[in-house]
Image 1 (tube, rainbow, N blue to C red):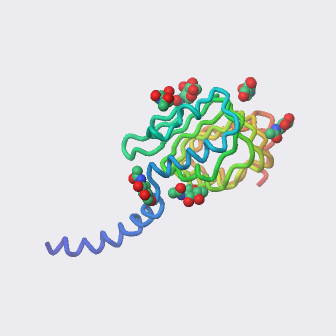
Image 2: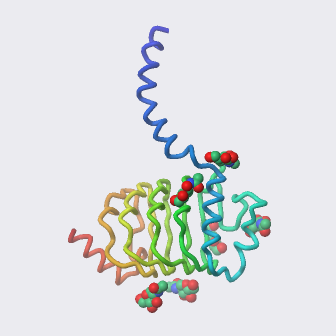
Image 3: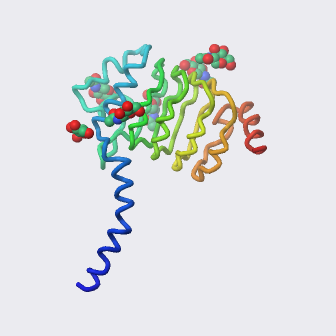
Length: 197
Ligand SMILES: *[C@@H]1O[C@H](CO)[C@@H](O)[C@H](O)[C@H]1NC(C)=O
Ligand SMILES: *[C@@H]1O[C@H](CO)[C@@H](O)[C@H](O)[C@H]1NC(C)=O
Ligand SMILES: *[C@@H]1O[C@H](CO)[C@@H](O)[C@H](O)[C@H]1NC(C)=O
Ligand SMILES: *[C@@H]1O[C@H](CO)[C@@H](O)[C@H](O)[C@H]1NC(C)=O
Ligand SMILES: *[C@@H]1O[C@H](CO)[C@@H](O)[C@H](O)[C@H]1NC(C)=O
Ligand SMILES: *[C@@H]1O[C@H](CO)[C@@H](O)[C@H](O)[C@H]1NC(C)=O
């Protein structure tokens, strides 16, 4: 009893900041947030040749049943998106940054264009990111450096400009930053620029 009385305040002091951090990062979002984020994406898809989103992404069923969407079994939140080869044309909306449990984002072989919104920097659980073979433009964002769990980053066949930001050097888990990241010739040029920083 005496020992517990001593430990409790200590535990509160140690646990409180962690709890608060978790609260501010995660508590305002739920599966409804995920649905809004995906509907925002859908509404900015201007071409969907197989009508996949139009027919399948219906609000009468859970987003977890939507084509290309996977939810986690613990939190029942969206953990993976796979739009590989769906032939979609559109832009990426800031709302996508609200998918706070997203670990896997694969949208290769589509025609998404425009710059990437900074709100995506909130996707702190991302481990896999494949934007390959789209028409994204603008600089490769510095804030890719906030994806501390990132293991794979694929940006090949896009219209990005500039250099690979030096912030990527801090991503200790990053394994696939190679030929495939940007395409070989561009990669060699950009690697040179990283080494010179
Ligand atoms: C999600 O949170 C909002 C408020 O932030 C609430 O109105 C809504 O009912 C919640 N949805 C679910 C499915 O829990
Ligand atoms: C959407 O596609 C998924 C996966 O192919 C399928 O399981 C589901 O039944 C479809 N839903 C609708 C409403 O068509
Ligand atoms: C992603 O989608 C593509 C095309 O629908 C499919 O071939 C592939 O198996 C999917 N990958 C995963 C990991 O679900
Ligand atoms: C989601 O993201 C958008 C843009 O980043 C923001 O305006 C919105 O308030 C966010 N929250 C929810 C719960 O949708
Ligand atoms: C990129 O995707 C297009 C279709 O969107 C395809 O025709 C082309 O072969 C792909 N390029 C590569 C290098 O895979
Ligand atoms: C991307 O760059 C290529 C040339 O490298 C150009 O032909 C194409 O029109 C550009 N696409 C966009 C969407 O800017």
